[in-house]
Length: 420
Ligand SMILES: Cc1ncc(COP(=O)(O)O)c(C=O)c1O
Image (cartoon, rainbow, N blue to C red; front, side, top):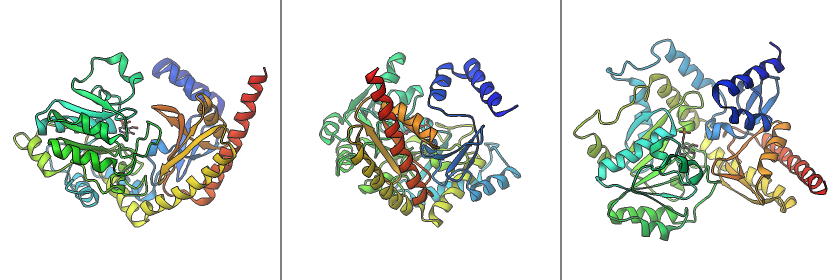
């Protein structure tokens, strides 16, 4: 089958068997069929090469198919792939030990699952189980996943409305507003769930002191603090975990995306001994998962963290992130009529357009120039850049030039439309 026929065949199957609307959306943005990933690049069906600045929403911290992670998984595959479940699993034990070593505060225990949503589901359940309370406070614009439980605490009505009533006892407060959180957290609150930087909400960094104040409010009322680090964990923001920017230690912390080394799907809920004792103390099987903690995912996770540490990628993320942000600020200065903000920490950077609808056009223009990005799920005005932490200055320069050209062409297209 030639490249065009292959592309048409895949789109046709998406239309018929997966999701026709999604097929339209993805083809409009100019995405082809991905066939290979290597380092910072994805190659499509037509042999085109894309600098992966979306990075699977932050999954590819080490780039695509890091050789150490691939070698660990291949070796594991030759011995044992999925867990028999009744036996002890050495890879899970080793990864849990490593996570406890690098995690902040008293986070010592890990529950392994397969995705970010599952990790957040577990966090809500553990908070309710540990406190015996019904209430969860979340933030407007937050994203914790789309399964029914976590959809209840995901702060965008567009995704929730159709499926209501959802979990009872949930309230939302504006993100970054410590006073509103302090008012909402009370003696009926099981937990406050928060992203240390809102990702899908549009890369929002809270004001200094925000996380410390919500920690104090939780302590005052005996509520738990759930830090959703699904997108921000393992160096993405220039620290191993983003809550370290404020030195705040949560009771529960969720991880996913890059935790599988960019090779295997893996989600983790970490918790303190106090929470674990209350949840698992009288029933060690109260929360389980068949595939969670499988040997392949866990050995990928362990190999990935070793690479991250050995290659100093957390520090690199901070340094390259500063460089990228500076470059983008230069572009913003030239296109201030189109670009309202550039913000971010480490290699989690968002650019916000002054108007709706521009983002989609710029994504298509960037794709044309070999850079893959996407807008934030809860805020289409914001394009987010979450490239591999191994990205070089030359690659950032390439991306900056592409962005500048993409903005120029979009501006010309829009002014043509206005004239028509
Ligand atoms: C902060 C955060 N929590 C949870 C999730 C849900 O993760 P998943 O898509 O793996 O279910 C996401 C996904 O983008 C996320 O960014």
